[in-house]
Image (tube, rainbow, N blue to C red; front, top):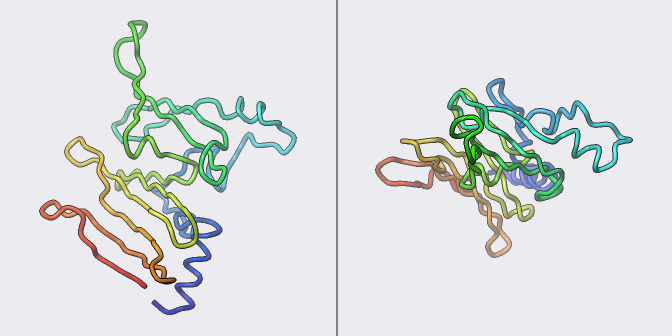
Length: 182
């Protein structure tokens, strides 16, 4: 990877995150009203309580099964002041006991305002960063009713060198290294 390209990539990761470095495709979305480009009820004169009330609950199909999940928004509670979310699945009959089940497993327990949902591919991409050369970008997909990482791009530093590795899921071998840049 040319040094200029590598430097630009690291700057994008450091300042805006690798997921935001690319334009969203038409089949991709952030959680509405919370994402990078749109905050429809955001007003500069709102205090934190006003913002929390503005962003209290969403109802969106995030697991691509045709049924909306109930999404609780935690305003600026995540890494780098991103919004985080608790996602609930509605179960059972109306008015009969506990009807909500918290989706407390990956990827749903790591959704924030930088998470990208892809309706066409039915994937969820999360991004965790510990610095310019310390991040994980995971793409999840439901395979045989189990959500698994189907692609992982990870950056780590070793001996003052940034190493970026990309792995993809292979049914026979599991996660397989497909690219490595130093």
